[in-house]
Image 1 (cartoon, one colour):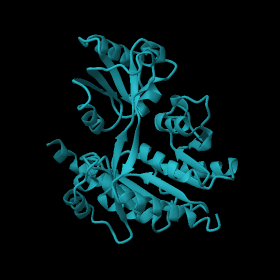
Image 2 (cartoon, rainbow, N blue to C red):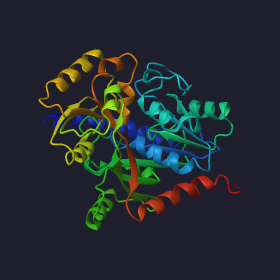
Image 3 (cartoon, helix red, strand yellow):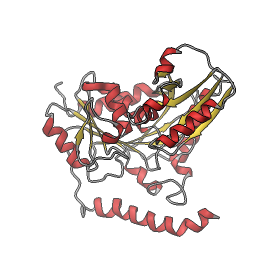
Image 4 (tube, rainbow, N blue to C red):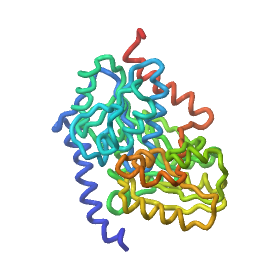
Length: 354
C-alpha cells in the first residue's frame, strides 16, 4: 500500500533525473568535463550496499603495480567540505569512512582524496601530483559533470536493479535505462559457486547492450583482525556467540557467512555509514554484557571499524573483544581474466609506450 501511495512521487522524481541525464547532459546543456588520463567510475543506480568499496580496492590493487593511482570520493558524512588529500592525521569526520579505509589499506602508495565536486577534485589531484596516471571515482555514476572514460556499475545479487523500483517506491536512484550508459556491469555478492542457469537468468534480466560486458563477483572473507586491546590479548580464542555489529546497507551476506562459524549470532544493525555515539556504544556494551556465556565477542566490518576507532569513543570499548572481518572481491572462474584484461587494456590505451 505504501509503495502504491508513493508511486506518483517516484514518477516525478524519475522524470527529473531522466531529463537531467538524457537531455541536460547528453544534449550538452550542462557541461561535461573529459580528462586526458584514464578515469574509471565505480557506481550503481541503486542506493548503496552493492560493494563499491571492495571493488574500488580490487581495481586499485590491479593497477597499482604499473600505474600511479588516485581514488576520489565525496567523503560521505564527513564534517568537512571541499578538497582534502588524505594523510595519517585524518579521521572519519575529516574524510569519511571509506576514504579512510582506502588510506589505511594502501598508505602513501595511493593518493586518496575527497571532494564533493568531482571535476574540481580531479583537477586538484592532477595539480598536486602530476604523476598520477589513473583516477578511480568511488560512487560517481550520477556525477555527470565528469565524463568518465570507463563506467562500471554494480548490482546486488540479492536485489538486482532489474527487479527494483525508483525512489521512494524502491531503491533506484534512476530509471533502469540509466544502466545503458555503463560499459561494465558487475553482479556482486554472488555465491562462490554460480550455476550456469543462475548466470543466464541474470543476463536475461539485465539484457546487456552490445557495448556492455557483464561479470559476476563474490566476497572472500579473511581472518578476524582485532581492533581493541582486549581482542588483541584474546587473539586466537574460540567464540561460541557473537554480536554482529554493522552500519552497512546490506549485512545479509556477512551474516550468512558467519552462521556456519558460530553457535549464535546476535545482529545489531545500524543505518549505512552510521556515526556511532557514546549512547550507541553504551547500548552495544550492555548487549555484550548480557550474553550468558564467556565465549563471546563482537564482529564488525572494516568500514564500521573506521568509525568505531574514532578517538572520541574508542576508549569505551577497550575491555571488549571487537574484531573486524576483512573481505576482498573475487571473480568467478573464467571471469577474472576477462575483467582484468578489460581494465588493463582501457588504461594502457592512454599509455601505449609504457
